[in-house]
Structure formats: C-alpha cells, structure tokens
Length: 86
Image (cartoon, rainbow, N blue to C red):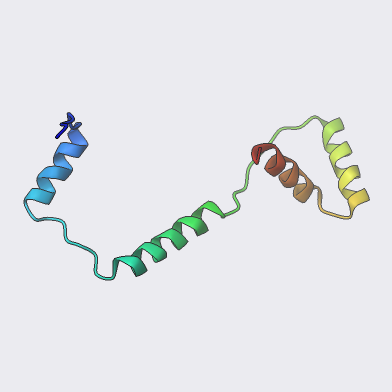
C-alpha cells in the first residue's frame, strides 16, 4: 500500500474521523442530489459587475443592441458569455 504525507488539514480530518466525530449521511443519494442542485443554482446566479468602457464603445454597444432589439446589458453579457464559453 502506498502512503502519502498528509497536510495539516488532512491530519485534522483524519483525527476527527478516528475519534468518531463524523457520521454517514442517511439517504446519501438524495442528499447528494440536493447538494448538486444547490451547487448548480449557485453557479447559475447572475452577478452584477461594474465595467469601464470608453464613451465611444458604449455608444456602439447601445446602437448594436438597439438594432437587435435587446437591452445593451444583455448584449454585453452575451458577448462575455461567448468569450468565456470557448
């Protein structure tokens, strides 16, 4: 069996487990689904940000959004989403 050196946090966790301070979760599958949904909801939250743009870029963004019939904030979010989805 291969042994690894534990860091401080891992050593504390192991000691807690050995002292019986941790218990198994009843209905693990259901609890796992609940926690996965909570994590998904957290990741899907919209957050407000502040961004500095030149006046010219902002006017172009607003004009393009108007042509597309959407709010300029939606267009900006879409551009950022596409850039980060690669």
